Image (cartoon, rainbow, N blue to C red; front, side):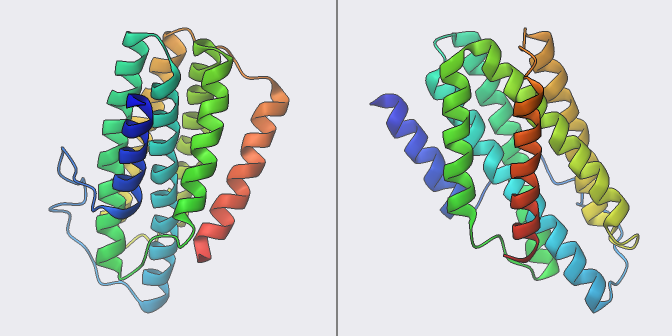
Amino acid sequence: MDSFLIAADAALKTLFAKPAAAEPSPARGVAQQALSAPERRLSGALMRVNHVGEVCAQALYTAQASVTSDPALRRDLLEAAREETDHLAWTQERLDALGARPSLLNPLWYAGAFTIGLVAAKVSDRASLGFVVETERQVAQHLKGHLSRLPQADHASRAVVVRMQADEERHAAHALASGALPLPAPARWAMRAAAKVMTTTAHYL
């Protein structure tokens, strides 16, 4: 029951409360050039996709932490979730600054990611860590792609994405060092396909 209540509280905070970052946004103090209307729309769409990724990260880590019986792993997962809360807040700040909105489908994305996290964690802790490694690697690669697409003048969004990419790579490396079980190729392909659907949809919705 405690795990259920904690998970429900995390879902409500992620989806409906304004996230509070423990660290100031990397965009703070960055000199920002004026963006044209098309540039603003593009930045808003890309940061909406990144915001969705952080919504899903909260769901994944919360689900995995609620299942594991290893106290050390639970602490690591919850610490990663805390850092992802910073990312959630930073991307929300950029959406607000760009006059863009979060994805209308965030509850759906959260539910799907939470379910996947539960399934992975139910298999074993090593499989759960393997899922973290693959997820974070794919997210880092996705963020790298966004750096090539974000308008050059949008220095604030680019600063946020650079920091997020570094954090995701660090999370992947930590999970790997903790004994992650490599995922089979079909699982990695399925994750990429699901991510493609999510990012394409969230770009607009």
